[in-house]
Length: 435
Ligand SMILES: *Cc1c(COP(=O)(O)O)cnc(C)c1O
Image 1: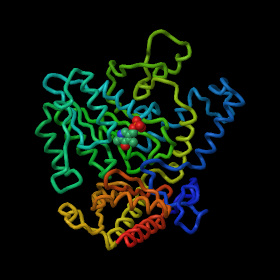
Image 2: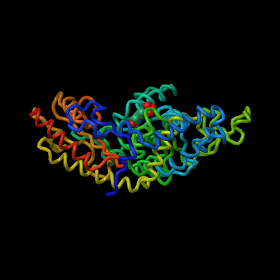
Image 3: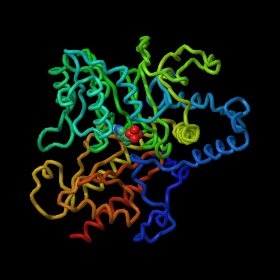
Image 4: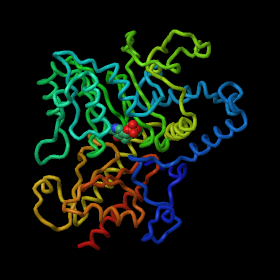
């Protein structure tokens, strides 16, 4: 397994995060939360400092060629789009660095969700990330429709925690004629399930549906080939596995086959042809492809943080070597967890009656159906917060989803086998102390 790039990142120390029970107060914590907020890379730190310096020494002139580091702000996104294209498997024209995830999702739905009397449903996974649920429902309302009739959710079977591919395909086949849009998350934020993007996209399109993806938990986590999979559109944020910092600028993809003149609908000057943008012409002439959707000039500080992290990905050889590392790390963590005295298989968890402290892992066991994250489900009332507190005191940063799940994600860019071992050993110690 290749060396992790942990030295490229600032990982908080035990002291900094208040992990009072860990003996090595100045050592780095066990950060397994890159699925929620990636850590700061030293490269991002440098690039943001450089942009602050450019701002302080050039002010408005930093927009153009006098930028001291050759990254004039007017064209800053041109440094990001090639890396975005590589990481999601798309052509450069198909991607844009812009906005924020939920806003981009609305933009995409404005262009791609066109309900008719016969075809008006939105098919998604049950318990999608709340922001997505709100977006789907409010788009229905914006079209004068009742979300209860529009939003069609697929749930796991009773006693199961993840969706079966066949159930998704059967629903698409059965309901296809009434579905306008199929939109799933690439990797489900709660369960960690990686959906078969290519298969679902094809099945949806065979029924005449548009197929879009929310890649918040997939980008920088699993390999993607959006263009070859013929995905219609996709959106993602950059502060999770892409480590671009809290609330950072986001991403958008539109397949090149979409060249219709009614796209984009809600124009802004940054979607206008850059050759004449600063002539300020009265008529909008969009850039061909995804960048035509750009509305505003991008936040440079957040774009600089993103660029730094994407350069670290590039140095690591992008997603293929990282994915190989990821399979080993997550497989190791899973194996260690399964060896716990407190582990029970999911079939048993589904019919659990006992009050003895125990947990299961609800993320799919097949590496092809998951990325880095494992979701641990704790099986008695009030157990999860106690475990989460215990882990935090020992410096293991995972993230809790009330009422009973803790997500642990060994990110291949900066986590190591030692992180997996620490997390499993500390989990056992906390369970022992409760039992
Ligand atoms: C993280 C996440 C979001 C957050 O949306 P923002 O607009 O970036 O605040 C939305 N949807 C999904 C699926 C997510 O995982």
